Length: 354
Image (cartoon, rainbow, N blue to C red; front, side, top):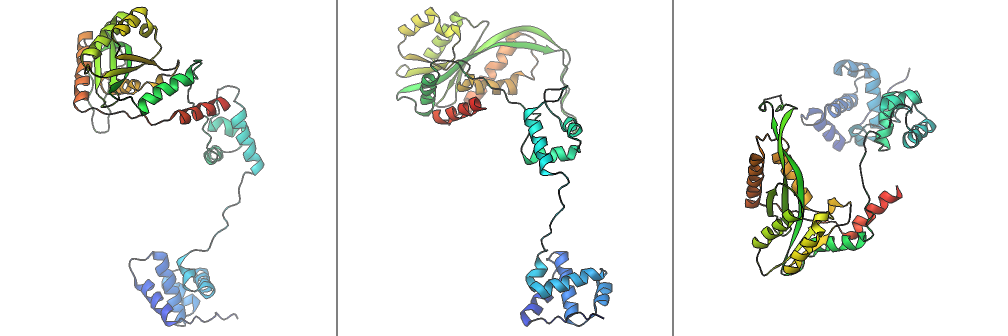
């Protein structure tokens, strides 16, 4: 008959064990282990300890042995466990990764967990786990377009330089047109938001014409000079340049960042610029609208005021746009450009490598 090894506590250990056993702020598992050692030190048999604490004998034996081997630290922390052996071999895992990266299913453009699980004869949960582990997301796609502008780098340095280090005694404007803004009237009124129910809007509408929003975003203070016109030809662009001219201090140079739309390069526009030498146009590279900060402001006005709106006519649409500009200028938000030319070129290089 095996006799359990006697447990003898030092005064310090006895004090700690008593504090754990009688404490209410300690984890329940630690309190239980302290009771096991406390009763064992009193010479109580294992089966009686198990009965008193309503636990199994192996549990009592386990923590007695842990204490005898590691003393107090052995009670505070569980022993490391080996974990479950993997059900899928590393060879199979690599086969799934290669299939995800290098192949597509016969009836789709990309793999889903269901189609990959069927093709590899494993569970969908295994596919999800492997994809998560290796950061594979076949369902996502990001779009990009590389500029083919031969003067791309030159224009990039020019525009980014204006953002990061604007000239003295001048104002930098990011200028563009948001064309063909539709005046759409929903066929039924918007159903309001309710608890648990989102606002609801009919999918059908009546068209009442369009307008074009010309906007110049002041990169220094975030204010916007804006105007709505029926078209966006060179005539309208010149009218907008005149508006900018009248609404800015005459002693400051004006640097306008614009895209490569033909309107901005029209001969009449060039003649107007010669008559107004304080205006300087800086063209972004082709296919690089992301470089024009006013596009960020266009996204805000679309999201906040236009997209979910219902307008009975173009006049009402224009009124709403002007009200938004007026409200924005009362508490303008400054858009700060932070990317350097070097960081932009690194990202472009990464896309080309891929």
